[in-house]
Length: 93
Image (tube, one colour):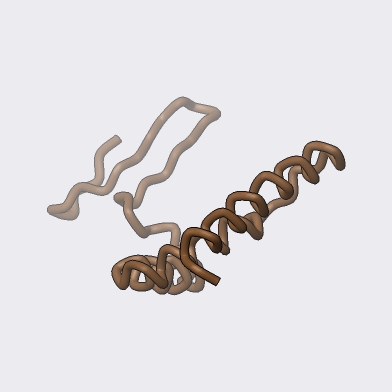
């Protein structure tokens, strides 16, 4: 099968999948099959896409910690107060 024919098959698969989901009226979680197929097709043509897909898998397997990406803080919604830890170690509200 040639590459243009494979691309047309993938587009047809995506349309069929979209129609099937509309008929069944489901919003399934996870990646649609056609999206995975397009990603693999693109990875076949571009080596950098394979690196991106592998990075997504690695990122999805990593555990997220509460401290990741944000400074540690405590929020008291009842009193409307936020406590932030300063980098020099002094804590003030």
